[in-house]
Image (cartoon, rainbow, N blue to C red):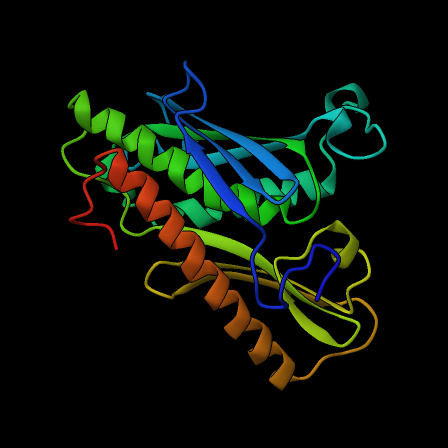
Length: 247
């Protein structure tokens, strides 16, 4: 058993609250244990210069952490005058994950910006951001369908992410901060509802790891992501999201 009495293959309690913000085009609050993140989506009628006049849309993300999201206060990155390498890496990951499950031609020459703000961090913030961003994006697309801005749902599949790792020789699902900070292997997996991998980020923190250990971690991540996809589906069905083209 772990510090919070979870089994090794058990997710932290997961709650996703859709339409958390009144003014965003789509939004969600996700809670995974003590980690809490607010996602807001914004639709803009323009695309980056490299996509102009190509009839294709774009999805991008911004990620930030509030100063007291952690036990000790962090300085706001805008005060420092630059994004940290970590924040840049995470927001690129979120953008890639959502673009992988979106038909950009159905979106038209529009950009969807996903603002991901961590209000409390206890590990797994990048993975939770991907999961909640999928919900916020689906809600933004639903708004566009309702307003007849687009004719078909651009989302081709749901996507979610989870962290896995090896701590004290044990393979664990959904690491909290205390586990993540002492892990021998740290890994984040992004996967679609069809079980297709979008991204795998894995690193040995102490010693190299074997292919057998990698396979064990991937199997565990697949289990967790299937559970997260189920949570997403239940929420979006209640919001009358058209699932005909989403699996």
